[in-house]
Structure formats: C-alpha cells, structure tokens
Image (cartoon, rainbow, N blue to C red; front, side):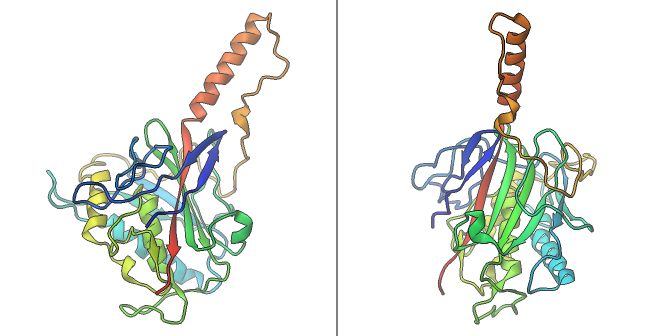
Length: 309
C-alpha cells in the first residue's frame, strides 16, 4: 500500500517523501533515502540511504504525553517499542551480533510541540501527542507522522520528531495477542512502527511486517519485528558499525527542550547589495554558499495509516 506523500521544508528546500513499495528482489523492505522523487512502481527509492552516524541518540516526550494512558506507562511503551530495534541480532552477515545502537528516552519533558529543526543551533527530538491534527495539515487517516531531519548529501540523520494523532483517537495498552476490538488504538503497535522510521527505515511491502504502511486500530502484531524488518535494519546498521565509538546522545548543535526559531530562506537574501562593491559581491557569495550548505539538510515524513478490519 502506498504511504502518504508529504512535503517538508528546511531552509527553502522541498523534500518529498517517496512512495516505498517492494524491491524487485526477494526482499520487501526499503530504506528511506535522500531522493526527492517517487521511485518507479515496484522499486525502492534511489538516492543515499538515511542512517544515524553515531551510536547514541536522545528523544523527549512532550508535556504529559497521552490523554488516555498515564505518563509512566507511556514511557514504558516508548522504551519497549525502541527496544525491539535496539536488541536486534543480525544473522547472515560477516560479524553476527547487535549493531550497538541506542535511543535514550530522556527524563525531562520536551517543551516543543511540533517538528522543528534549527540548522546551526540546539535541538530536541520531540514526541508529541497532538489533538490538533487537522490544524497540522496531516492526513486524518494517519496514526502518526515521523519527520526525519537529515543531510541530503550524505544521508546522515540529525534529528527525528514524532507527532501522534490524538484527534478522535483513543490510545490504549491493548492485550496481546488479541488486541483491542473496541476501536481503541494500540500505542505500542504504532510506536514500534514509527521507531523504525526513527532509525531510517521506510515502508515494507510485506503485510505482516512492522514497517507495513497500514494497520487496523486494535492490532498488536507490529509490536514484534518480522524477518523483513530485521533484514532492513541490519542493512542500515551492520554489527560492529559503532564499535569503539563514544556514546554521546547530545543532539548535533547542542541540546534544548524548546522549539528553535524558524529559519526562512536560510537568511540568504541580500537586500541593497552594491553591485559595484567587491566586498558586497563577496558577501553575497558567502551567504549563497551558506544557503547551499543549509539546503543539504531536509526532512522526510513517514506515516502509518489506518485501515478497516
């Protein structure tokens, strides 16, 4: 099933989330890439695959979390969801084992209620339960939208924000393996899927996979990864990827709990520059170079959509 196509901005650059379908090989997983164009039907997107380039990252839950699940349990569910990916054992590769990738849930609450990234400044990976979904302009059928901020040249992930749709949705900690049959949405089912996007995976064409693009409300099957999910993750983070690397989860540019200022046009507009001034010409070139560098960093947004049982 085709994922929703979203457009994200960072410093004037439009990044379009490519449709992710099955690759022509036996695999069904795909990785999110820097591509700005949808791939041909049945193909993974071209471009540089996205991935974190450091072993430890940090994220924060905004405010008091969900309206329907106590915050202590919400925190536990986040940690359970991320642990599915962090504890993967990669088989069939040169060096079996875990990739040693960690996502730390911070103790302090985020004060930023939206996806936000400051190019040259401190940032916060924020996880927001949003009851103003229509105002955010997202697909009403989406359970959540994950925004992946990255360098569009290298594919390095810098920051990830997650917005969870609580507009008319009731999230629950559904029983396993039966799930919820009353229309409530299993939070762990949704978060395990979104955590895959956090680590740079795109949607899978395998219907039973955690990274499949849609889910009925009370499903709990996405809590447990399938072989397809594991293969995609191990492709992104082979064992020993971060061996010897220091674990520092401070965001690139420093840490904050608040949203940063919105940077329009990268500050690249030179107003009233003197054409006859060599200094003015150099100033304009320097600013243009800064703008090009900023434009190499952009967001992709991924969604998990609701389907009827």
